Length: 299
Image (cartoon, rainbow, N blue to C red; front, side, top):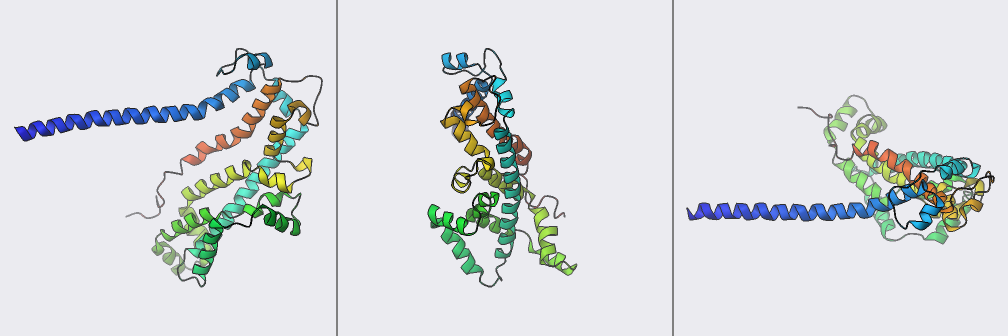
């Protein structure tokens, strides 16, 4: 009887404790989510609000009057549309190049029989701790003739050593039997890589494609250092110009017969610069939790 009472008490205490723990976790996570989401909602609401409302209301999540002049003004300027298209193209091309180079380098390094593998891995790990720095990197880009070129935004950051090590570890966990079976069927190493390894790597391809795309899209220092032609500015440089200076005067080509709210224009620029990545994230998220070998080997 005593043991049953103790078990019942322990069960009640554990139930109460788990409920308290869950409640605290939920409260903390909700608080962190609000801290993250509320500023975004304020910027979104401010992009549709008038100048008087933005000045009179320090914080709001729903504008009293919806106005779209800021967005009309932005897309009526050649400078902003050009910067947006430039960023989209650089991000798309850069993501493909960086993912391709990372995966093609990680695959041979996953083979323990590769000659010189240990030396190459040590050099990669060395770059995680020590880097050349801003000035030497700029000199290399200059001497390669990449200044004022879009390749200067892609090639210097083409392979992230941390991502490379993670992808290499992922390749090492793939079943060797699949690759051996492909070689028996007549596939060479390139065939094994593109026909066997990459189809099994969709979750990690999606993950690092998103990481690389976000990095290129949000990159501010590379275009600031390597691009001096205003016609080749990326969206982040133009956003910086709009936020740090008078937004209307920062856009060189525009219709001056009507001017939108100054703060609303800045909010709208931030919204447009943020939405593309937020739009693509849900389509790639489904790959994050998928099993690596789903559908590849069946009993």
